[in-house]
Image (cartoon, rainbow, N blue to C red):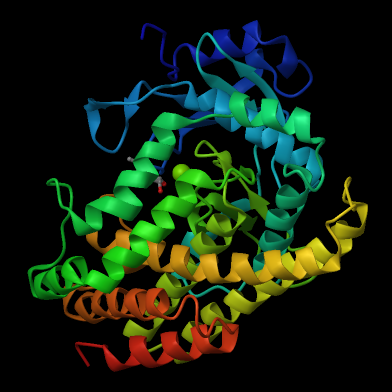
Length: 408
Ligand code: SR1
Ligand code: MG
């Protein structure tokens, strides 16, 4: 894989070479080039000029940045991400950054710099409450679910789109890191010594293994819609100025894991990360913030269902897809979201690529937060087809996280 990586020195010339950026940024007046990539895979630069204009350049490296060249990874993921960004932005205007170009020679995307925005996970860690974002994300998932599934796309066209968006390498990361490795360590798992018995109990629980087998099957076989594929709170930007007035300004970004998969996966990912935020705040004794974080579960779900109901009358084939199909989809997706939430929260405790919400806690209280997440994950998995009321999710989370607190 031979292509030049972007850096501080070559970016001005690179910008000059991209006609799509004319009028967006002036390569002769650049004032700063800052590498801000805090994800696990890519280089991300914010470039600013003296006129106050800016752009983001994101480049896929031929390996996993978190691990280094020892873990090669196709940079074609940049093409998958650009496709998802453009498709999602068209379907969910305002909730996805604008893409200016994808450069297939350098695997680089030029996109809108969301100045005045910050990553939601960081805001949640600080205990900041951005109202409306969780609901926006539910609406975004619904826009994508409707607009990229056979509800909104001609069946023949859909089959072609599914093939084009195939993203096997990135799917394999999820199949391994989320569903399999927490139960079959190949040397990438790690926990605090005090949490090792919890990790062992988790990985050996036959009910959890069965549930994760079911979740993995759904993930690998339900090619429903062009899902985001990694919709945790680090994949959402929120307004940095944090007033609760006006539009919340939520944006879903970083969709390189996008593929045609189960709609419920994105919902489950969000829920898992709300629970992870709650676990942090329970551990710190911030009960109100923990309660607020868990309130996001209902907001995302309600936003999702509300938007689906708005869109459903426009379905392109209503011959046998009557209102009862929508009800059955909603019921099924909720059950699956419980399973995926369970999978997505425990992998962040046990496996590679952890969550800063938990990792930045001092070990004596991190121990309880990690234990609480692992136990909650198993409760959710075991109840995913029985009691899937959102109130049950929240009350399980409140009880289990509180009961496992340590260090106080
Ligand atoms: C090797 S990539 C590790 C993780 O980072 C991404 O955010 C995904 O969640 C992936 O599983
Ligand atoms: Mg990411």
